[in-house]
Amino acid sequence: RPAGDGTLLGGLDPDQRAAAELTDGPVLIIAGPGTGKTRTLTHRIAHLVTAHGVPAEQCLAITFTRRAAEEMAERLAALVPGHAAELTIATFHSLGVRILREQHARVGLTARFGIADQATQLSVLTEVLGDESAARTALSSLARRRSAADGVDPDLVEGYTKALRARDLVDFDDLITLPVHLLETEPAVAEHYRDRFRWISVDEYQDVDEAQYRLLRLLAPGGGSANLTAIGDPDQAIYRFRGADVGFFLRFREDYPRARTVQLTRNYRSGPHIVTGALQAIGPTTLVPGRALTPEGHHPDPALIGLHHATDEHGEAAFVARTIDQLLGGSSFHSLDSGRVTGEGTQGLGFADFAVLYRTDAQAKAIMEALTRAGVPFQKRSHDRLADRPGVREIVRELRFEGTGGSVLDRVRQAAEAAAARPELENELHVATDLLTPLARRCGDDLERFRTELALGAEVDTWDPKADLVALLTLHAAKGLEFPVVFMVGCEDGLLPMRWPGAERDQEEENEERRLFFVGMTRAQQHLYLSHAAQRVRQGSARPMPPSPFLSALSPEIVERHGEVNPPRRKPTQLRLL
Ligand code: ATP
Ligand code: MG
Image 1: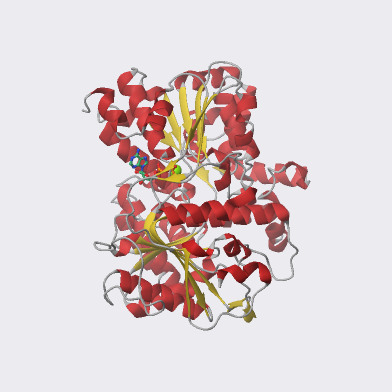
Image 2: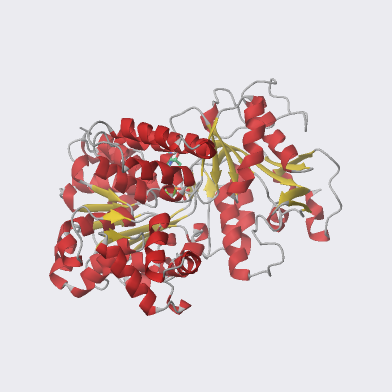
C-alpha cells in the first residue's frame, strides 16, 4: 500500500499535482500532447480514494479505448491495490453495456442481449427490406442516423429496431442512445446512477459525440456540484468522421460555469525539435488560444526531424526497414542516406520501440512486405471495429456451432480450424486468430464476456505493448500512445491531408487532417521520421504525389532531409524545405 498521498502525487509536477488535488466540482484540464494528462487523471483517482476517502465504487473513469481502460486499471491496481476492483474504468460503450445489462427489463431486453456486428445488422435489414442491396444502402444511412439532418426514413428505423429487439439484439449506437433515453425518461434510474457515480473523469474529452455528451450531462448535470473532470486537447480532435464534435469541449465552461480550469504545458514525451515542429505544424489553426508546450527533461543531443523523400511506396517502405535496422545497431548507426543518424543515444532499443503510422490501412501493405524481407517482426492494428473484420466474422459464426464448456481460447482455435476448411479464408483467419488470442485468453471460460469484448473492441485494443514487435498503426489508432521512434509515412497532398482523387478541398476537413498530422508527430519520443513518395499506387493506378502542405510549416533548422533521388521542383511555399 502506498504511504499516503505523498507517494501517490510524488510522480507529478506542481501543475499536475494541483490538477489532481482539485477534488470537488467540475474541472477542465486542457493540455497539449505528452503533458501527462492521462497520468494526472490516474493519480487523481488514486488520490481521491486514498487521501479523501472517496469510496472507490463511486469513481467512474471513461477512456477512449478498451486498451486505455485496461492500462489505467493496471496502473491503479498498483497505486491503490486494495480498491482497484471497485473502480469503474470504462469506455462510453462498455459503460452503456453495463447500464443496459443492469436495466435490461426496462428497455425490453434479456440480461444476455447480444450486440450486432455489421454482418448481423445487414441480415436484419435484408429481412426488413426483403432485398440485400437496399439493405446495404440503408445500413450506411443508419450509420449516420445520429446526425440530425440526414433524414433517415422513420419507418425503416422502426422496422429495423423492432427486428433487432425481436432477436434480443442492440447495435453499437444503441449502447449509448438506449441508456440516454432510459435516463431521460426515468428520473429514478438517472438518480440511481448519479448517486452511484459521484466522481467522474473523462479522458480525450475533445472527441466525445453528441450521444456520449448527453449521457454525461445526465450523469453529471451542470449548474450543480457535479464532480466531473474533463481532460483533453482540442488540437487532437480527430474523430469528426464518426460524429465527434470538439464543440462540446470548447463549451465546457458554459455548461459548467463553476468549472475550474487547469493548463499543463510541460511536455515530458518528445525531444525539443519534435515539440517545436509539432507546434509549427498546428500553427494558426490551433483551437487553444495561447497554446504553450515546452519540452521538459534532458536531451543533450536531440535528434532533428528526419524528412525522407522516396521515389514510390516501395522505396519509402525500404527506408523504414533500413532505418529500423540501423537504429537497432545493424549497420552501426550509419544512415545510408545522410551519412549519420543524429540525436541522443539509441542503444537499448528493441522492436517494440518503433511505430510506423499511416493515414490509411492500405499503406501498410508495402511496409509489411519490406519489414518481412528485412526480418523485422511487427503487429498491425487499425482503429476499425474488431467484430467487422472478415476473418473475425467467420470465427464468430463458427463459434456458434462449437460445443459449450472449456476455455474460450480453445473454442476460438477450434472455430478458426473449422472456418479454415474454406481455403479462400486462410490468410484472413490467420490474422484474425492472432488478434483474438489475447482477448480469448483474458476471458477464461466466459464466452459471454468474450462476445461482449469482441463487440466493443477496436483492432487496436488487441495491440500488445509488451510484445517485442514493431507497431504498424493508423494515425487514428495511435491516439494516446508514445514510442521512442516514430515513422509517419505518406506525408503527401491527397493522402495526408486525405482527399479522394477528384474531390474538392474542404477547410474543416483539412483542419482535422492537420490535427491528425499533429497527433502523429507528437507520438514520437526521441526520433521522428516523416516520409513522402513522389508517386504511389492509389485506386489501382500510379499517381504523382506532391508533398504534404503540412511539411512546409516546418522550419529548416529542425529538419534533416534525405532522399533517394533529387527532389522534384516544388511550389515556392515549399522551397524552404530544400
Ligand atoms: P496525449 O495527449 O498524447 O494523450 P498525455 O497528456 O495524456 O498525452 P501522458 O501519456 O499522460 O500524456 O504522459 C506522457 C509521457 O510523459 C508519459 O511517458 C508519462 O509517463 C510522462 N510524464 C508525464 N508526467 C510526468 C512527470 N511529472 N514526470 C515525468 N514523466 C512524466
Ligand atoms: Mg493521454
